[in-house]
Image (cartoon, rainbow, N blue to C red):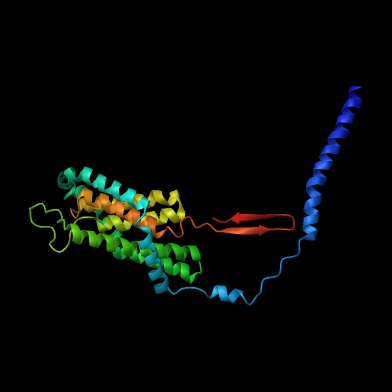
Length: 275
């Protein structure tokens, strides 16, 4: 009796499984047979799409206008308020910290590259090379990254210079009490703004793995400006916040640019993500 009952249960399970399979498979087969085949793409339409591209200066001007529209938003306000609060909190220690860092022979060789790495010329040159390589090799993501870096450099420099003229904070005095510079101002730090903007662009395009080394380099550049006695700590703190705002604004239109493509087969329809 147990064997007979087991056989009946097996036959019953097989009938149920066969019924479920037919319920699912038959409509799919019928739909596949009834669906008309998709018309082939018109080969004459493809070149029209491929040739629809902007020149470098046209794309740059269009993107800069678009970037400026993205700066005044809630996320930018959070970073501006946070950066301003942090700069005010460290402001009382500005002169004492510079006195300790400036003129330290032990750190001279270590911090010397910072003023070159964070210069606008070096940052803009690296961005231009990235864009040129992407354009020459027809790599859209590399070209997009280079364009965003160029935009970040231009906007960072423009915003920083405007703030310097508006605030007009003198640079730290030399150890002998003489003015450090009478032709430029201190607040905020342009080196910090440019490098943090570039680091943010790289993080937005490449993910957190790129953020670790790039933000470390940006922090190194910012600290080097204290050692060189060109800025106070509050200058580089607000400059860093400015760079983050700019970096997030220029990547707003293409952040995490991972293309999703349709995947079509004889018996399936889906999507594929490429990264």
